[in-house]
Image (cartoon, rainbow, N blue to C red; front, side, top):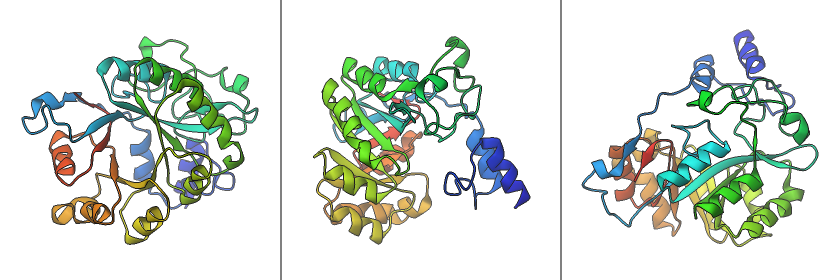
Length: 288
């Protein structure tokens, strides 16, 4: 337990403030999570099976994070240049009401300081710069990206936006997020691990929704079926989802729901998922 507390402190997350973000996680998970993974960029032109297929689309996970720091404006710029169909981001609302793009609730893993996204003002976050991520040295004094910046970049490159709602403390302000989407006219999908977030979003928008899950379960399928245009987005790297000829993925489709997946970085696995009927592929490093 002492080691887990050390890991949580290093990540800059208090269990009381963030619902035990690191509690119960193995220390090995923490180290792997913070490790910069050396991605090899691959293109589906290398695969005869997927070449020219209309059965799938590729979304850049946190932007094209294999070539630029994740969730930053350069990552979305590079995604657009690479021809991605879509781009995905994670978002939080600052204390003074600015929606910003960042994966973790704290800044310490990616930036040169430790701030809470939700407890800081936007100006306070602008005092920090990125010091982690692929090719970060190419982007000196790189600042945090706003959700408005993200939508603007998606509009510029005609990319479909996928926005992950982090946690569930800003439901009363979802109208602000939706207003930004409308401002830039970007076709958008909203995703969340919290089903309650999706329920509240459905009251405000008819945008496509996906319930995020690690493992596909009958319970998750049943929940998604209660919302209009809500699918299941699953972790493609878990054997539970892909064993027995992707039985669980096929079960989602048998229930009349669509599937999306994250984070697929191998073309052979991508082929398997497309064969199982998954059209929406979120990836760190595969391009067309």
